[in-house]
Image 1 (cartoon, helix red, strand yellow):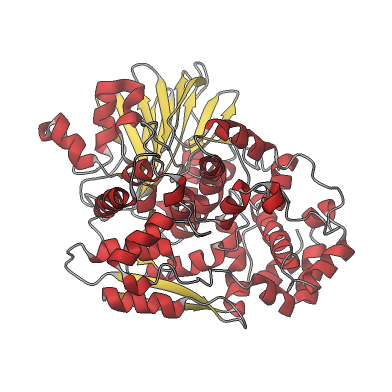
Image 2 (tube, rainbow, N blue to C red):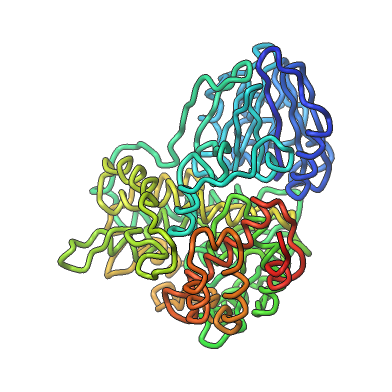
Length: 590
């Protein structure tokens, strides 16, 4: 796993100074602590910072073949198959990232169609002065770009472009409204004016410093419809094959790896599959628990699973004091902001895991592919049976906190809903919306930033084509039954790990952020209310009241969102590094 960045220039534009590239490399260093390398051409510059996972000795990038030079952030899980097909004599290294380069020699810009993995790739053809920017279909790995008068700059994170002075620290008000109402932002445009995302599955073709073409791969298969012929017994056999195939591929690494274990269905399924594979040493697992009254706690369930699988297990206890001490740094790592409070346990788990491993497997994608969320079941019911549209209400609706009610915060979701209108069933349609927006722009973004802040690679075996191919062919009755989502995954777990109790009621994994905020509500509310970014959008007296009432079901998440936004704004709009704990940081003048 690595960090990538670079620039391509229009003809007549002089290349940037080395100090610009050095600033980009410095901003990427946490993504690649094992070294930085540059490739400079008359019309392009490429930067790669490396986190060594496969072919540690010989896998440095950039990689070159003929007129092509590649830098990549990712893992190619079908690398062995690609090498066997092309012939091992054509490869110079053991790096899995050499496979895309060799495929490019054969297929040109269509090479991503032949990849199985997670990746953000930049491939420059010096003979044609052409750059390809590619991102995996689920958007597991991030990639951003900005256009300027002299060409295009790109990087793994927006913060890299900001640090190098290649884009202004200017906030988009429409994206800010999305963030406040949804806790994430949708679509191509980021919250920074002028900085855009390479969309999941997209390949941008940039010739002589100008974007000329876009192609896009779907994460979901277009296969014959088997929803009416696939039996539960046959589906269980296929699911077993798919999970074992995916987990085995995701375990390929030349460094130690582990698993985040929540006690839920998704991580339990991964643990069950991993425990069936031979390994030279015990698997390491980590679970987070919260030191707060009435907080959801699945530590006992996770510990029981770890004991059954004989893992080396660690429980990470997170306290309010730990959160207030480190929250400025946690918010700072989320340069493309997602105000999902799950960033808190993810960051602390990553900090602990980084002491022992370099790769973490995690269960993201299970709810989206196998229909686990309760909002799916609600969305497919008719209105007279209590059905409700997904994401129908924003975080600050009916709270009377903001100065002006956001009006267009649902536009990105509406565009995704229109794209999903042709899905075979209503359930598939609502899943498609989450796969298009919520998954890449919240869940995967959170996982990437929180792990990379500690030099960890995150892998998501449930978001593998072999698993997605099966999940998307399931009839609705194998996704949801008896008002339970992830039905087939539960049945598989029941067969292979009864100790997981997959049909027992689950407590869920909810961070008690409202309880913690309420304990210091008056102090935090005053500090947040006095921030310039908050005064611009909200009434200070209502902000203070919101924080003092933060123990409520709706007020807690809203107070958290404002707290996150205030910290994020200081770092990424004002350019101020975190200074001390949350109270010290918010007390400092701008």
